[in-house]
Each structure stands twice: as C-alpha cells, then as structure tokens.
Image 1 (spheres, rainbow, N blue to C red):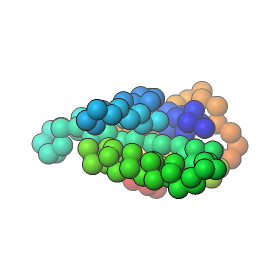
Image 2 (tube, helix red, strand yellow):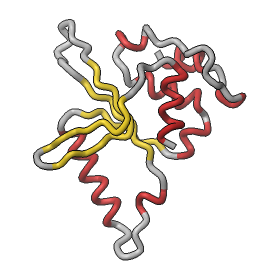
Image 3 (spheres, rainbow, N blue to C red):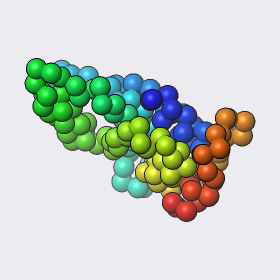
Image 4 (tube, rainbow, N blue to C red):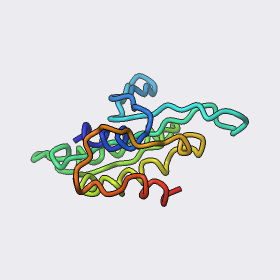
Length: 141
C-alpha cells in the first residue's frame, strides 16, 4: 500500500519521495515510509523540512500476547520523529479509496513554493475513480 500512496503523490505532480527515509535519533534509526526533504530557504526561517507519509495496515498492530505493545511502540516512534521536526501524517486503506482527496491533502502540506509548481504527470495510469486531481489540488490551495 505504500506503493499506492507514493503513486498518488507522484501522479499528482509531487516531487518523487525518498522511500524508507532514515532518521537517526540517538542510537536508533527510524525509517519513514515516504519522505520529502525540502529546503525552502530564502529567508523563511526554516533551513530544511521533512514531510513524511506513513501507511498503516491493521496487521502492524496485531500482537496476541500484548495488544497494546505495538501501538505504544509506534506512538513512541512517532513522538520521536515529530520531536526532531518530521511532519508526519498517517494513512490507512480508507484514504486510498479517494485518490483525488488524498492528493489534495498531501500537497497541502508542502510549502507554497513547491505547490505552485505541481502539475499532474501525463501518461501515468489514472483510474476512473481518481476524480480530477487538478481540481482537487487547486481547491486545496
């Protein structure tokens, strides 16, 4: 499903993300499913931002011995990533059911300098239920 999430972003015109982007915090390296490392610069006060997208399936949280352990571990991981500035968003299967709406939400998280250059990629497969990505993106701006 990470591949589907990546496709929505790339087909809509976002820059290609880094898959399994490593973030080292202390002695631990975490991997963000999809990430965009951006340098908005130009006096914005931010030298770099990392926008992260994570896909969560139900299987990830299944543990018959301790049902809360996977959830608590993932919460600690997410807290650590956010503490170092990763702008993380979690997605689930339901999000992929409306790619146009998903794309609009994804691109909204990018700085205006990136958003104004977004153009859907001609030739990428666009299923019938994708909707009008351009319209969804324009409405989100």
